[in-house]
Structure formats: C-alpha cells, structure tokens
Length: 145
Ligand SMILES: [Zn+2]
Image 1 (spheres, rainbow, N blue to C red):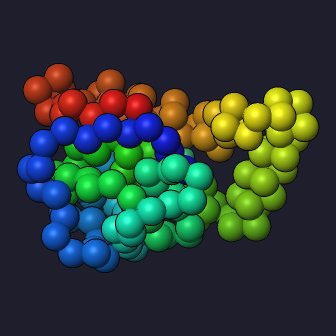
Image 2: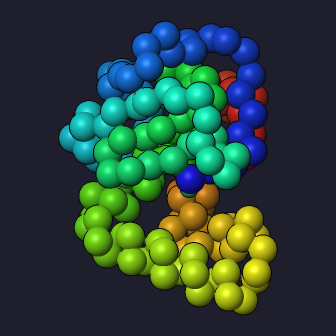
C-alpha cells in the first residue's frame, strides 16, 4: 500500500484498465526478478478505501491514480516490492503484514501512523528509495512519496 503519491504530467498514462508491465518497465524495475515482474497485472481502479493510491494483492497491483508506463513510477516500484513479498509466501506475508499492523495499532492507536511502521511498508519504502538512487537524475520524474 502507498499513500500521498503525486504524479506529474500525463506522459504515458495507461489507457487500459488492466495491463501487464511493458518491457521497459520490467527492465527499469530491476529491484525485482524480471520473471516475477512479467506476471504482474496492473489494474486501474477509481478508488481504494483508506485513501491509498496503490495496493498489492499477490501479483495484482491496484492503483487509484494514473501511473506512467515508462518504468519511472515510484508508486509501481513500491508496490512491486510487495509483489515480491507476496511471492515469498502469501501466508507468511499476510501474517507478517497483519500481525505487524495490529501490533503497532495497539501501540500507536492511530492507524495511519501504524501503517507507516509496518515492517513490510518500511522495507518497501527503503527498497524504492534505493531503486530511485541508482536511477540517473535525468530519468527521474517529479513523482514524490
Ligand atoms: Zn506499501
């Protein structure tokens, strides 16, 4: 899941509601295995409850905002980390995800604050950041997290 993503411009905004990643995307998102990236389905939906802009269920990435298809989306990069986490074991991921969420919820009370502390989210943010760092400055867009 991801919140507060801002996209800039309309370049490459996907026209189809459900699509696979392009070859350029599979190559660009080099923080996950190409074979796994090729199994991903990107689904454009109008709204995700909770105000999220992206959410991953297995190899399905749901996005509530337009994303470019040129391999420069930090939102897609972030959700792809979750695809890998799911692929490592759906049950283990779910237990880790929910367990960490509920544990933090007890401590933090405010669920939005708890969300940011979830272990899986921390990992996704860190890996997206590393992925972004290894891109050349010219290839970055104005997308922010
Ligand atoms: Zn996330």
